[in-house]
Amino acid sequence: MDISLGLAVAGGALAAALAGIGSAIGIGIAAEAADGLLSEEPGKFGNALILVALPGTQGFYGFILCFLIIMKTGLLGGQIPVITISQGLQILGVCLPVGLVQLYSAIHQGKASAAGIGVIAKQPKALMQAVTLSALIETYAIIGLLTGILFLNGIKI
Image 1: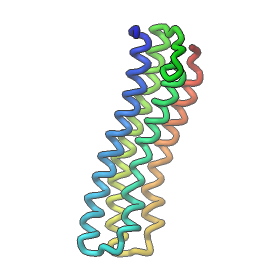
Image 2: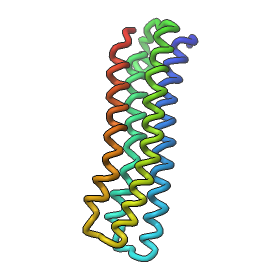
Image 3: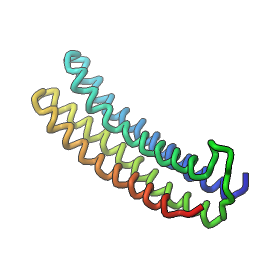
């Protein structure tokens, strides 16, 4: 594997890793709040689970971008095209901001979900409002992924 392919692969791995780290942190933040709620009211598990799961989607978005890079570089098919240093850097350049958007949005979605768990502790009927507020952060994770896909499709190999 030459340096140019290595740059492209590093980009995909970085996007997946940053997104996965963000999701793990975000879920951890929300799960801590949920555990506090469940220690007092175990019957609210289903409602809490929805909010805890929300920050996990960013990990999937990072994986999707990584998978697209694996497909573009031919790593699964065995037909690896010649990739220039410029193309490898372009792919890496697409992945870094996408990974960072996923990292930060997952962490902040975890915080919003934790606050939402506090809301449903006192007002169970406000679940959808809490989910909606946390899901607003998801918008930017999706925009980040779509931007990455558009830029990746513009890189000709």
